[in-house]
Image 1 (cartoon, one colour):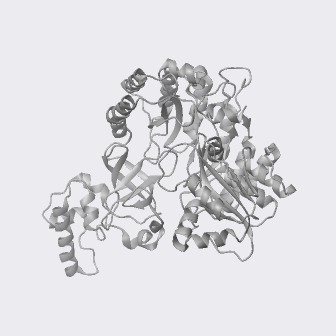
Image 2 (tube, one colour; image 1 turned 180 degrees about the vertical axis):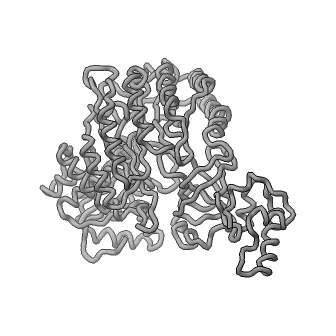
Image 3 (cartoon, helix red, strand yellow; image 1 turned 120 degrees about the vertical axis):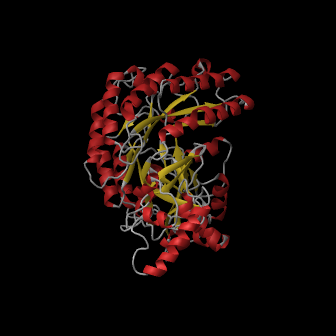
Length: 593
């Protein structure tokens, strides 16, 4: 971030991660963009910075720098919306402790606005900071900022439909996009994924899941396909490639019929098809994924849901995941917590998605699969609940049905019961051993090629500031000792490890060579025999340390003889000259000279 010479507003992206909204890098969330859109529309100058960039600057320059920086701003607005527990590779959401430090460093005369579901949650837990000119938004943070800029007074405000469109479109070309560190450059595109809000609220707003924040947002308010397509077009103009359709508690109930009258609103295939095909018409669009699905809606409306499923498979990028929130297979838990589907409805929905979505796409992934969420600690739960959950999973697998991911977490918030830790831990272990392991091997079989893997970290599963330096991004690090972790761009990508260094923020294709508990290992394809290092050779199954050393030694000897010519005609000739048996399965790893 460039140092400023005159005071501006500071927009701090503390990241959001809600059940229907991604905003942790490589995603850029929509609420932070709406904030920037307010300032863009008002022609007010501002700086945008992510919380990870802020941490790095404070770490480098010290706390005194932070105080000086905050003393030279016109105002600050921040989104902190991480309410879904998770482990993050590319960024870490703003914490309550960091928020307190930020506020304590702010001069009293600087207006400060903090919003997002994390802020609301902290308030409910008793956090009530006392400070002049500080406002904690509980409605729309962007509209609250707009009201302050217009009147000079803090007031909880909701945006109008017209403002929603205006700020979404202004935010699409704002600094939250153009200054986002994951956007990359024209020459070297980053993995930035643009989370677009399709609608807000939940069709179960009258009696929604007790643990979830989405029903609290009320009856769904839809955006039109034309409005969303125009916003994404503007984002493409700003350099965005990849898009996820977010804000949807259920993809199948976008503009559904009978939302106010029916327990199971009827899906409307036409608007979602208009939206998806309209987005695909722009050739600048890269990866396109979507959000959640409600199994009960699908199961109770199979004909309409089948039509929508076909559209999803046709238009989405492969690797797409529909998260299904079963939460528990126990009917007592279902009733006590107003859950949205039962096991029979779940299996019906999973069958439909598998029917059309399990075929592999161009990146090597099944086109569309369901994910499944379980939550521990809900009211009505007993030790028997976990056996019911496990039995259901085994029933699903005995049918040969695929699940892309199984997410098991503990309930957040007050008013829920204690978790029987012994049974809960046994359930998790059984799922990982008997369900996840076999699923992983079926979804990512040995020898399968996965294309366009984006490399993110070295020697650990969290990206550090040092990973953005030349030592980790330059071509000179390729093939050195260590481990590189990366993922394909999209929702819920599998973590891939390679047992040598690859320049970070680059992309390549890999062959799957092994399976971990929840990740896989691989080796790049089409490596150049003239440039391969010993570590790259060692990573290939069947070639150990000694064989790799022999190959490197033989190549060096041959290069002294031929100098400017290739050492060998091809990899097979290289192996033969080294007296090592050639296996045709090695072919994919080597380029032809």
